[in-house]
Structures are given as structure tokens and as C-alpha cells.
Image (cartoon, rainbow, N blue to C red):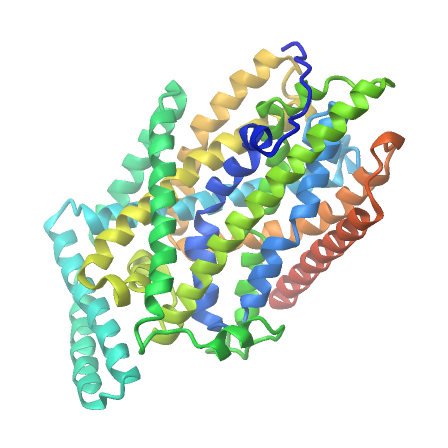
Amino acid sequence: MPDILRDPPRTLRETLACLGPGIILASSIVGSGELIATTTVGAEAGFGLLWLIVVGCAIKVAAQVEIGRATLVRGRTPLVAFDAVPGPRFAGRGWIYWGWVAMVMLVVVQQGGILIGVAQTLSAGIPLTQEGRDWNRVHDEAAATRIVEAAARRGGDAARADALHAEFIRLEAEAKTLAKPVDETVWAVVTAIATSALLAVGRYRVIERVSIVLVASFVAVTLLSLVMLQFEPAWAISASELAGGLQPSIPPEVGGRSPLVTALATFGIIGVAAGELMVYPYWCLEKGYGRAVGPRDESQAWAERARGWIRVLQFDAWLSMVVYTTVTVAFYLLGAATLGRLGLRPAGDEMVRSLGAMYAPVFGEWASGVFLVGAFAVLYSTLFAVADGNSRIIGDGLVLAGLLPGDEASRRSWTRRVACAWPLVALGLALLIREPVGMVLASGVAQAIMLAALGVAVLFMRYDAVDRRLVPSKAWDGLLWISSAGLVAVGLWTAWQRLALLL
């Protein structure tokens, strides 16, 4: 496509009209990291790791901007830029390239976990068999009883709480006598095939737009739930709990498991995940920022265009950071205030039902319906967004591996093929593993470790053959060094933690 040179916007209104990549990123971010991983950390740690969630969202934005800036002004695809980072090379490709390959494999595992989550929401809302309806009835009654019991106990009504606990034990015993219905498996297969077909024919844009509306509505409901929780004495978050959560500390182990292990895995996929940091520049290129700047030359006009569009990119990234940090913190606090106090950890067949308990204190009998619609929108839209984004970078990776010619037609063709295969591969992994929380967190571990590589890469991008006319301020360099150091520290610490567990 020929370059279409454009002067950068001069006013706030014009700048807002040019935003896009960060908003696309923010809409795809509200997915498994927030709904599953972040709330699981809240369930395990209570409010104690709120500080880590905030840091996990905020610390990546400088790296995000630098990766986007390097792509914008150098005219290279992001994966090519990462592959140029010095270090060991194997089979002609750099160490970051092979780290990306390993990470993408686990991102597909994560998508399998998300597919199970989608199937669970559909099974809970639209059971296909009588066994499924019986399963839902008993488990829904057990979940509701557990919530009312917790409220009674926190309200000081010990007698009622004991009676409710006895009823909960009875329902749990009844649940164990039920055979696991096939509804979840059927819905997983139907969802994967339908998604692949939609991606194949390119008819998913309407569904994508509807999903974005539903996700935005669900986020609004989550924020409302958090506010309304403050009017319920049994569930309100105190100022001391909030202040304590913002003070850096490590909560004690619960049941032989440290919440920090889950939190570090979550660190990799909250805010801008490592995979999303690598995909973000592709959205910037598709938005037209690179074409607007044009090929680098020595003219003053090019330098002014580049500086102006870099400012737009920075504004886009910082605004999206405010959005996804707010959303992530809301999910964490809601999980800590409800699941943490109930002693529920989302896992296995009951992941979706456990997550739905977060909304019961506010919405009561309506909670299940509200949550299922919202959870479906969040998780299903993530399937599309991740398949769409990763298919682009995988096409680039196939070119670098010498498996594809570098022409644009081949890239587009294989981008579509990869996107179509993505949900089917995720289905195979979902049916094989069937542990959605573990699958999501496994990807989180890989992406947290990958952050260390990206922390090194952004410094190389900043100082390698930098155009003297685009040298950033010392304040920005300081922020970038802090971001890079944080990413390297988290990545190495996560790698050490996993190695220690293996040994």
C-alpha cells in the first residue's frame, strides 16, 4: 500500500479522532486476565496484593510506547525489530524470536481455557440435557446457600449461618452423586467450529461490535457492583483494607500455596500482556500511523510528522492504560471482597459458577443471569481479538522462519488461515486438559517470563541507531529504564519461582 503522508493532529479533538490501537488493545485486555486470573488472585490473597495489580498495569506502558515508536519511525514490522536485538541465535533467528514461539504455544493453551469458560457459561445458561439441568439446579442452590451463609456469619447471625452451612453440606453431597453432563463438551465443540467458520468467511465484525458493547456494559455492571457493595455492611471494603492492599507486602501461604505464585502468573497477562505488547505495533501500523509518517529521510518535515504521531501514540497508550487499570483493579477488589471472604477459589468445572458469586451480594437472584451474559461477552470476544491479533504476528514469524515469501498477499492469506485454525487448536487443548484456570495461568507464567526479554529489547530499541531529531527527554528515559527494570525483575523472579517448584 502506498504511503499516505498526513500531518499529525494539532488539537485534542483531532487527537481523539486519531486514537484506536490502544482502545482495541483495552477492549481485548478485558478478558481472561481480568475475569479469571485477577479475581483468582483476589480470592487467594484478599486485598493484600492490590499494589502488585496496580504496578502490573502501570509499569508496562512506557515499554508499550517505545515498541510502538520504534516500529513507527523505522518502517520495520515489530517481530523483525525484536529479532534484531543482540544475543544468542539459533537456526538463524534470535533468542527473542524463539521465546516468542514458546510463548505463543502457551497463549493457545490459554485460549483453550477461555473456550472452556465460554462453554461453561453456555452450559449454565442454556443446558442441553436433563443431566445438565439437574447439575445446574443443585450447584446453583449450593452456591446461593454458600453466599447467604457467609453474609449471615459476617452479620453475626451464627445460628442461621450454621443451619445454612448444614444445607450447603447436603447439597454438596447431592452434587457428588450426579454424573458430569456432556453439555460443556458439546458447547465447546460448537463454539470452536462456529468461531473458526466466522473467521474463515470474515463475517465476525458484527459479532465483534456487539461483543464490545456487551463487554463495556459488563464492565459498567462490575464497577456498579463494586460501588453498591459499599452499601452492604457485610461486604463493604474498609479504608484500612484498601490502604493495606496498597502497601507492598507478601500475604502468607493459604493451604500450602502462596498467592504470590498466582499473582506473578497474573502479572504477565493483566494490563498489557507480553503478547499484547508485541501485537500492539501491528495495530498501530493498521491504523495508518506508519504511512502517515512515511519513510525516514533527513527532511525537517519528516521529523515534525514523526514527533507529532509519536505524541498521538503516547496519548493513545496512556489513555488505554487508565482504562484497563481501572477495570483490572475493579475486578480484583470485587474478587477480594466476595470470593476472598467466601473462601471460594475459581477452578475446574465450577470456575464460572464460582466467579458468578462475586455479583450475588448486589444482584441477588439476578446475579447468575447478569454474570453469564457478561462473562460470555468478555471471554468470547477475547477468542476473536487474540486470534485476530496473533494471526498477524504469526504470519510475520513464518516469513522470518523462511516458510513463507515476504509478499503482502502471502501474509494476508496465511493470516486468515492461522486465524481459522486458532480456535480448533484451542479446542483440542481444552478437551485434553480441562483445567481453565490452570491453562490461563500457564500462559501468564510464560508471558511474565517473556517480559524480561521485552525489558531488554525496549532499551535496545531506544539506543540503537536512534535518530538524533527524535531523542526523547531525560524524564522519559528515566521512566523507560524503570519500566524495563521492572519487567526484567518480574520475568526473572517468575522464572526462578517456577524453577524452584520444579526442583
